[in-house]
Image (cartoon, rainbow, N blue to C red; front, side, top):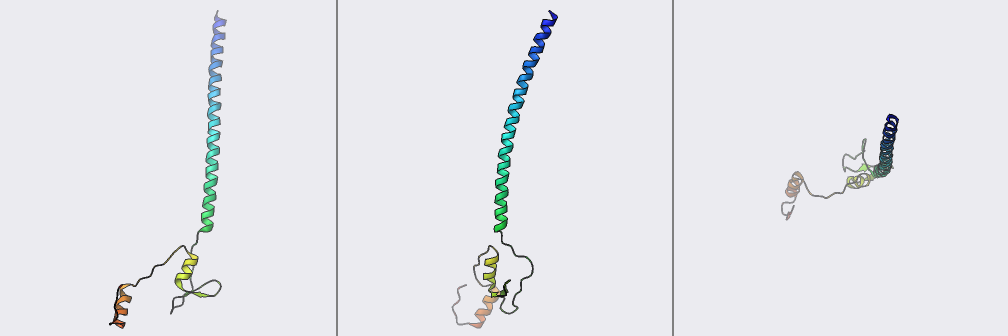
Length: 117
């Protein structure tokens, strides 16, 4: 009788171990699938960052600028208006208006003009 109980206990333990192994295998497979999806997402994100890095325009270093007219000399030696140079080398657009000092000077130079600034 004791050997029969031992056989039953061993069979039950083997059955429990089989269930545990099956659950662990299922969990490991789910983890592999999730890891693959995360790896794919990371690859896509890295690609997007590389593309953005290549498209990024930045200005560094010294810019040769005319002290009188404020034009910028480009790498080819041509002089460009400041706005044009910055638009081609940085992601900026310009809108123009006048600062208070220039407005005052212009109004003093042309007192009879109609000013709407």
